[in-house]
Amino acid sequence: MSVRRISGVGLWLVVLWLLLWNDLSVGNVIAGGLVAVVVLASAHLPRLNGVGQSDGQRVRLAPLALLYFLGYVIVKLVQSNLVLAWEIITPRNNINTGIVAVPLRTESELAMLVVANVVTLTPGTVTIEVTGSPAVIYVNVLHLHDIEDVRRDLLRLEELSVRAFGSHFARAQMAASTTESANGGSL
Figure 1 (tube, rainbow, N blue to C red):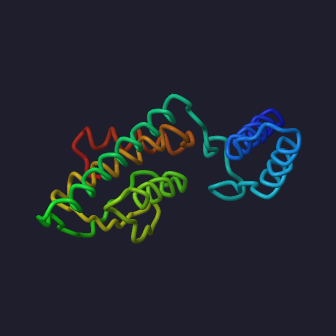
Figure 2 (figure 1 turned 180 degrees about the vertical axis):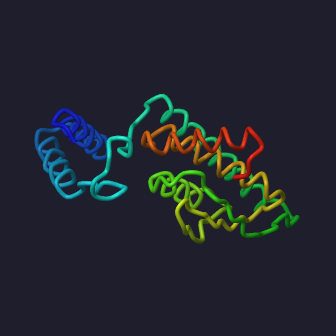
């Protein structure tokens, strides 16, 4: 990570610290700086695809795609919270649980991690297991009405996560997979 990027992340951590404590004092700024140094020193992220990683496998942030991804996740979280709240306050039971296996289209460990965690954060769904390369994610769904809808939603989430912070390699895999499925190939 470059010095400029480390400085930016450190500054952002100090700002978050100050916002969390809601106190702009010299002591709090110093404490935030110390916390930022400790976090940055101890949270060095390993390369996701191992030693000898080529430039095409490094994580690339796309700010606009990241904002779109965050907006998509927030909308899905609100939707699932409303569905679950409605389930709680109504006397009818619309629960229809099931487990859905969804093969992901890239070998990106980061995409797999993001999809699995967003699924688990969303009320009414939980990731059970992720295996293989490319990964197959197994999801327990509380309101399972259409398996293909669940698969489409998870594949869309994978696509958005790869666009937001996927490597060149993961983006190429996603493009190839999208082209293949558009030409009538199977996922």
